[in-house]
Length: 584
Image (cartoon, rainbow, N blue to C red; front, side, top):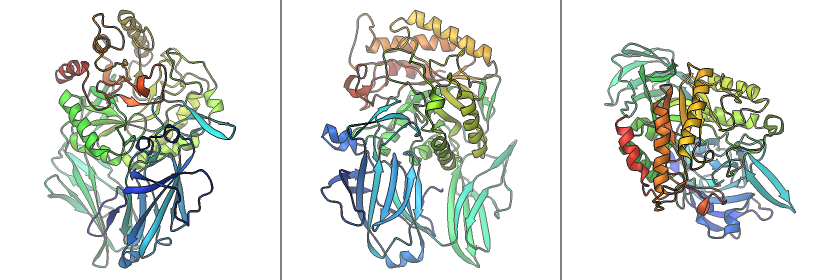
C-alpha cells in the first residue's frame, strides 16, 4: 500500500474535520442518518473530547458519520477510500452498504469504492470498537459481567479509541502502481537500485527515474533495469539525504499513472557487540515516546510531533522507539527528513498473561503461550507495519514485541516463528529484536538467541531496589555481565529505564518522586552504562508524561516518568541529558 499523494495522474481529497459521533446503545441502520449524535473532531481520539467519565471509558462500539461530494467526472477514475488508522477495529459503510472491515488500530487500510460511490453527495459511516482480548495485539483480559463489557489491559497506557489518522479519498487510472520497494546494494560510492514494482492493469511502457535532493536526474531505466547512483550521498543519523524514485506508467504515449517514493541509502550491520550505520558505530540516544497529547489523545498531532523532534534534536538525542505501536506515516517521514534513527515496533504489547501495573517488579507466572492466542493478529500487524515502513531509511530495526513473557514455556517456539516472518517480509533484512521485561533476566529468558540486539527495559532503583541507588547500580551491573557472557557478540540497548517524577516536587533529601531523585536515578544508570563497552544505547522512558489507567502509582491517571510534563514543561533532568548527549 502506497502513501497517498497527489500527482499528475492522481487526485487526493481530505475527508477529515468534524464528524457526527454516537456510542452504540442499540441497533444502528447504516443506511439511515445517525440519531442522537454529537460532534467529534477527526483525526483524534474521541475519549478526550467528551466530559462524561462513563462515556470516556466506555468499552464497546462507536459510530462516526460524515458526508462528502464527488464530481461526476471523478467516477471515471478508480476511487480508493483510505484510512491512516482506526483504533482498534473498523467496519466501513458507504451510502448504506458495507465496504469492508479492518482489524488493528495502528496501520492504514483502504478499499476501492467505485461500486458504492455516486456523483454528488455520499454518506460515509464507520463502526469501530475498542475491544481487546487474548487474541489481539495489544492484549487485554476481557470480562462480561451482567451484560457490561470491561477490560483489564496488559499494558500501561490508555486504550484510546477513534479515527486517529487521516481519512482520504484518492483516485488513480484503471492502470496503476500498487506497490514499490526500493531495493538497493552498495558497492563503495556506487549504489545499484533494482526496484520491486507491481502494476495493476495493462501498459506499454514504464519509466523509472531517480532524482537527487536538487531534483536532478541521476539514473533512469524501465521496470526491469538496474539503476546506478554514482557518488552516492548516504543518509546519515541527524544528517539526512533523500533520493526520489519516480515511476511513470504509459499506455501508448499517454501518461496514466505517476508516483514518487522517497528513500535514503545507508547500511546497517550488527557485529562485535556494536551497531553500525554506514560502517560507523552508532550509539542510540533518545526516548521511548507515545502518541499522546491534550484533546487529541492518540490522534495525529503534527505540530506536537514536530515540536517534540525539535526538542529532542536540541538535547542531542538521535533516536526513538515507536513504543508500543507504529506511529503515523507523517511522523516516520519527518524522521527520515530530520535524520532520526527509529526502532519500529509492532503493537504486540501485553503478551504476558498475568502482567499488571504494580508496585513490585515481578508478577505471578502464568501460561501465556498456552492461554493466549495472538499469533494471527500479531502476524497481520507485523505484515502491515513492514509493508508500510520498509523504505524508510530512519527505520534501522524492527521490534516485534514489547515485554512479552519470554521466560515462560512456549516463548521460544512462538518468537522463532514471528521473527522468521519479520525477516522474510522485510526487503532490507534489518535486525530484529524483542524488548525484554525485567522478569525475563539473562538466566530466565528463552529467546535471546533469536534476536539480533538485546533490548532491555530495566527499572533498578524504581520498581526494584526502590530508592536504593547504590544497590540498584550493583544489581544492574551483575545482570549486564550475565547478558554479555551469554551473548558476547550482541550489543545491549536500554529501551526503557526511568523513575516517576512529579514536576515541581523538590526534596532536600532527594526523595523518590522528586526532580532531584530523577537526576540521581539517571546518573546512577549512566555510570553503569559507561562502564560496559557492550552497552550501545540508552532510550529513556519516557519523553513526556502520558495518560494511562488510574492507579495508586499513577498520580492523575498519568505515567510520570517523562523528562517533560505532558504539556512539554522540562523537568530538572533535561539539563543533565543535554550535557551528556551533546558530548557523547
